[in-house]
Every structure is written in C-alpha cells, then in structure tokens.
Length: 293
Image 1 (spheres, rainbow, N blue to C red):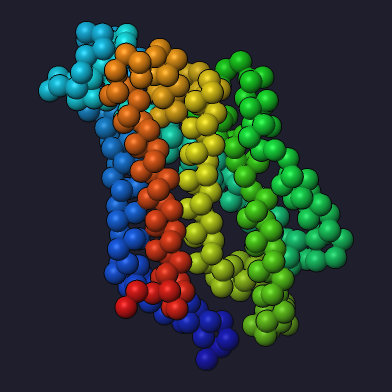
Image 2: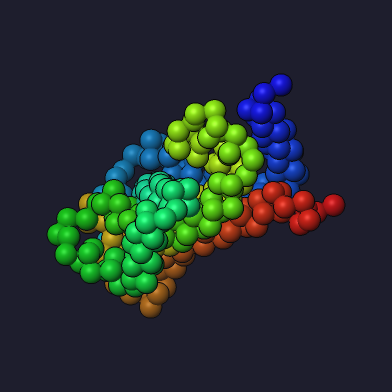
C-alpha cells in the first residue's frame, strides 16, 4: 500500500471520527443551529416580503403587531423587512470578508512557512507591517473617503486588513510540518511545492483552518457592525449595523422604540456568540483531551 493511500485512509478515518463527536457536542450543535437558522431567514425571508426595507408601509412608530411583526420605524418603515435584509447583508460581509482574509492568510502563511529564507523574511515583514496597523482606524479612514459604499466594498476592505494573524499561525505550523517524513517522501517523488502544500501539509491543519474560518467570519461581521454604527456602513443597502445606527440617530431609545434597535443588536450578539460557542465546541471535538465524556 502506497504512502499516499495510507495517509488518505487516515485522513478519512479522522474526518469520520470528528463528525461523530461534532454531532454529539452540544456547543457545536446549538451554536451552528442558531447561525444556520438566522442565515436561512436572511436568504429566504426577503422572497416572502411584499415591501422593500426602506419603503414607507404603515403608521409611524407602531409597536410590534400581527401586521408588523417587529413594528415600524419613526418614519413608518417595516422593521422586520429591514431586519431580514440586514441579516443577508451582514452574512454577506462576514462570508466575503472572511474568505478574502482566509485566502490571503493561507497564501502568505504557507508560502513563508514552506519556502523559508528570504521569501519568509519578506512575507513576514509585510505581515508585521499590516499587523501593527490600527485596523479599525485604517478602515474608518478608507470608508470615510468612499462616497458610495456597498456591502462588497466594505467586505473587501475588512478582508484586506484581517489576515495577518492567520498568516502567522499557518506559517508557524507549516514550519513544523515541512520536515516530516511524508513531506520528504513527497519531494522525492517529484511533487511540486503547491501539490505538497495542498495534499500533504494542509490536510494535517484542517481542524485549525476550519476554526480560523469561523473566527474570521465572526470578526468580519463585528468589524462591519462597528463601521455601520458610526455611520460608515453601506450607502445603498441595509445591514444590522445600519439599523442600529439609524435607530440611535433618531433617538429610538429615548422615544421608547425598543423594537427598532433590539432585534439587530440581539441578532449580532447571537451570531457572534454562537460562532464563538461553535468554535469552543470544535476545539473539544478536535482535541481528545477536551472532549466531554
């Protein structure tokens, strides 16, 4: 039996084992269920709404009722319609921003860790420069100079400044894996560096990479919410953060319009909190010493 076949068999066995324990872990099940439920609402919900988020559909400042589930805003807009579209925008920012950061972090980390030498020093220098930059301040400055801000542009900006910690972690782990026997064997068989990284190194870091994706996803949503709340959110879309910003700008708290700012605030808390709980649960799944008996 070849070394590649043995390695693939071990990887499949570990995946089945991890899946078994993940389905038995309450943190993973509860956390992921909440995230997926809100995602489903954000994706499917808009198709069942008869009004757009900014359309004036009813009486001003109406409390939640059978006609308006989350009430209306100070201007008579349907809060539930804004909430559903806001979920979609926030998830899009999290997914796109997290994906951009993940791809950059992986590319830099794997290249630096596997190549070493001058390549490693150069990439590590770039990583350190981006790492020491005050990310939030830079995001605020860039966003303030954009006259028209969209969900995609916001996600791209967030992704470009969220990757350094992933690159450093991947680099350090690649350093330890690049000298393993199976990697040396892959070199002897004539495999090129990208093939070795994808087929030999990356599978042995799959658990960490999965948790990194979750953290990047939640971090992008939080970054977006902060930008939205200070008035630097999308100018052509509704998000959970812009809902809170608008409600505070029009004194919803003082007017007692709690239904305007509580749903988006709870949704952001639920998404990020559930992602954290899921991440803790996955840590227990991948680390046998932490598994609940």
